[in-house]
Length: 246
Image (tube, rainbow, N blue to C red; front, side, top):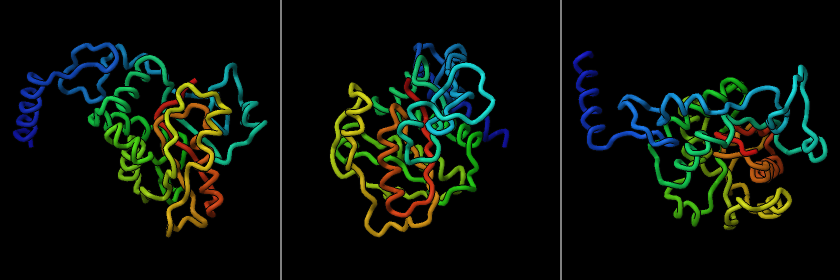
């Protein structure tokens, strides 16, 4: 075993010589054994999403709150999902990690991304509560543009780690919606309205679903997905994302 491990380390060291690892945020060269692709200094700057939070959407709240509390937005317009939680905020090194993973065709960042979302899910939810994991689907055109469906990869990784069945095609995106980066909360809701449907033949009635996406911004996308799932007979939808904006 020690000989095998030594051989693996030797191989990794050789690969690192020709293809050195760099921190995705600051560009600093990393030890070849680093699997998070962040240097120790940038790792410390990752802003974890932690209590106090809105009990529904997971929005970080200021001050000290010792009881369950829904933020004003959720009280005014309650989402169709039960709860949403995210691993870290989309700022600093966390933002660099997500952008490199999402837009730069760097699938090697899947492993650290799955590690982080799995850790958060284990802290916030009970895996035994769910019958299915469903990723937020990409339109085929957008999947071609990015080279892969990052939410699908996260969902697949969670399914393997937790043993929860993956329904890769439980939801289908029916039309191309374009980027929502510069849209307001209201326009985001309009942009995704009617953009999803349940796959023909999908058995979702009475199921409890963990919906997985890469980034939670206003919640418009995951809320529309949750609405479609609930209309199809799903009894509960919780949301888990890698990062949260704002």
